[in-house]
Length: 288
Image 1 (tube, helix red, strand yellow):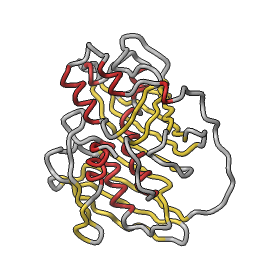
Image 2: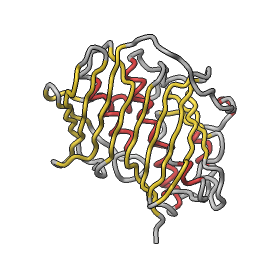
Image 3: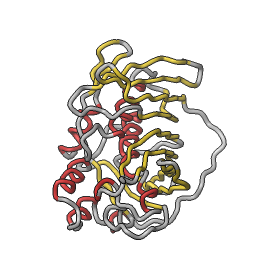
C-alpha cells in the first residue's frame, strides 16, 4: 500500500464520539476547500457504521450545501431513518462551525437474487497502455507549477488514467461531451465491501463534470476559464466490485444551462460488469 493511500484511509476512518455522531478530519485538495468526494465518502462511512454488516450500500443521494473548511474537523450526525426486513435507510449531515455543509441519504440492502441485465461496457483501451495522471500533468507546460503540484498530491492515492486528454490539458476547441477514465487505488484494500464503496464514492467526484467542460472547450478552474463546484450527487451500486482493481468511469454530459451542468456516468469492472451508475449536477460559471 502506498503511503498516500494509507493517509487517505486514515482520513476516512472516523472517530465515533457518540452512538450516532462521528468526527472526521479535513484537508484541502486541489482547491483551497474540502474536496467534495472526501465529505461524501466520510458521510457514507458514518452512515455505514450504524448498519448491520450483512447489509450493503446500494444507493446514495447527497447535496453539497456549503464550502468545507479544510482547517477544521467535520462532525457527522447520523439519523436512523428506517430498519426494515431487507432495507436500512440512514441520513448523515456534515457540520462545520455549527452549520451543515453536506447532507446524504443512503440505503442499504441484504443480498437477494433477482432479475439481471445490464448495458454493455463501451469499448476502451487497456489501462496499462495509458499514461498515469501524474505523467500527463508533467507534460502540461501551460499549467502553473503550483496547480500541477496540487493535482499530483490530490491523486497520489489513486491511479487515475484518462483515455483522452482531460479538459485542462487540451482546451479551446469544443469536443464531444464524453470522457473515459480508468481508476483504482494505489495499493490493495481489505475485503470490507463498505470500504470499496467508500473509495469509489471518493473518486467519483474527481472527474464527473469533465464532459461538461469538453462540450464548450473549457479547461476549468485549472486554467481560470470556469468557476465550478458540486451541487448534488447520486450513486447506485449495482454489483460487487473492488476499488483496488481497474474500474472504467464512462462519463457524459447531456445538458448544461443556467450556470449548471449535468454529468452522468457508468462505472464498469475490467471484465465488463456494470458496477455503479452516477449522476451529478454542478455549478459551472464563466467568469466575467
